[in-house]
Length: 68
Image 1 (tube, rainbow, N blue to C red):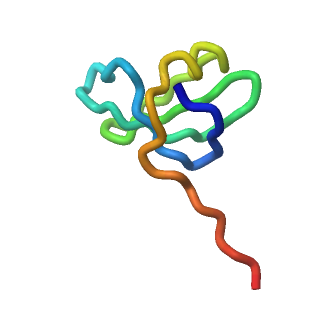
Image 2 (image 1 turned 180 degrees about the vertical axis):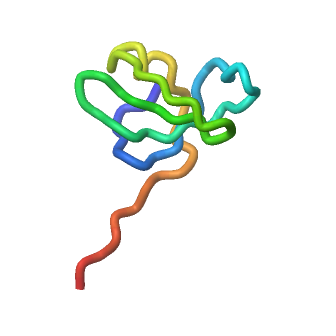
């Protein structure tokens, strides 16, 4: 179970998508979490509690560009 996440992070979920992909990108965060499958591009929305329960780990954390 993950504790913190942000927009643009790639996460691994417990169950694979029907296309066979297991990597998802977080594209919206709030009361609901919107995810896009990195393999086929399908978009789903999950309740925050459901997302936190089914997310295994963050694969690639999105880094904000530095303002200089």
